[in-house]
Amino acid sequence: TPPAPTRENPPMTALNSIASSGLQAAQLRPGTSAHNIANQQTAPFQRQSVAQQAQPGGGTVASVQTARSNGTQVSFDTNLRLKLWSLDEACAAIKKAAALCDWFLPSMDDAVHLSGHTTPADVIIWAHALGAPTVVLKLGSDGCLVSQGGQQQHIPGHSVTLVDATGAGDCFCGNLLARLAAGDALVDAARYANAAAAVAVQGFGAVAPLPHAVSVRRLL
View 1: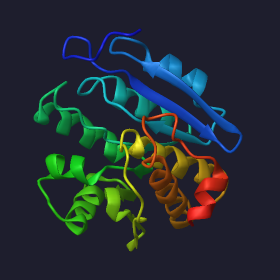
View 2: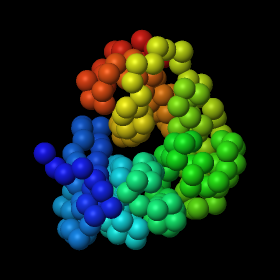
View 3: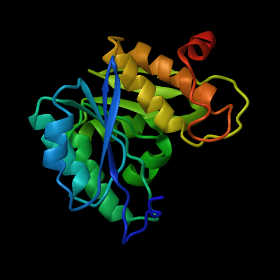
View 4: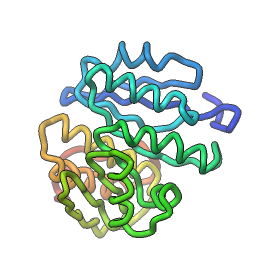
């Protein structure tokens, strides 16, 4: 069992390479070679998701830069963990990564800390100002807000019985990217991901409740 993340043992940067045929993942710790892993893992794939941060200016930003240099499209989920580093350190690294990604996927909770803004509209403006061309802001039970090319669309949440929200954001991001890799338009992919997360929170844990497509489409 790997040790629990701490400031001395920071979390790994998770690289999830997503194509319509499936997902492969690699993990980086500070001091490992983002360049080597990105060269080996990202080139054959259509989508790259960076899900966790390691150190400011470290593995996450290097991974994004290397993926982009190999022609890979990149999504970035902020996944803020203030027990592991200071807000100033997190802001510096996350802003760099957001400026390099194709899809910026913050949660509203994270964005409040990172931006100081408390409304989705202001967070969207802040996110685009960082350089992110496409933003999908996760709003929990309120669904999500999609912003791209000057157009915004709110996708409402679903009324479900909440059992455990652990992993709901990961479920959302994974399903969003999988649907994009399958050829869905962004809003359609976000609508599917929104429903997938709504199904997932009705079970306990981060893995067991992850839904099959039939359960998601039943909710759409």
